[in-house]
Image (cartoon, rainbow, N blue to C red; front, side, top):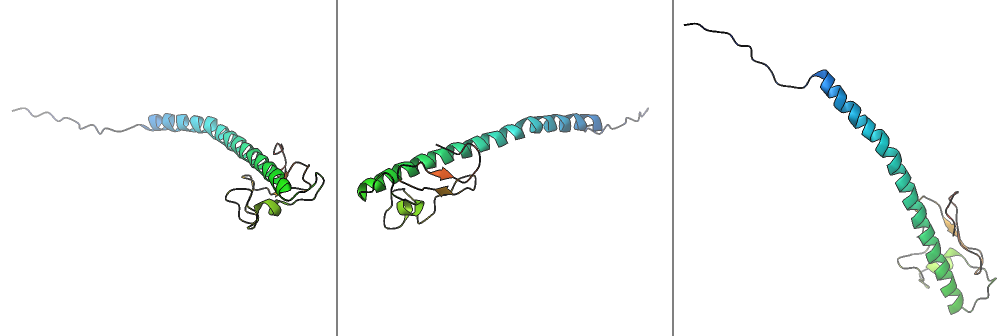
Length: 122
């Protein structure tokens, strides 16, 4: 009876195969992360512009209800206070820019502004 010794081969990945997979994942991350950051910034800008449009509409509604002239002074708290809710869900000065800025309004005929520098304008 002849017995042959067979080697048992352990199945697994080699170091080269693992390094190739890590390199591919790194390449995909290098492509995806800047695009994600750009998409996030664009979404925040668009949300801020939409908020500015809502504030402008609320200012116009407030001015009509209170019989204010075009040059009358107005603040964001006038349209978002507890007594006069012209913006849904706004409690006192709860209106904030998604990028961390704050909104300001000066007069009824002036457009509201955002403190965030860049393209956050109407």
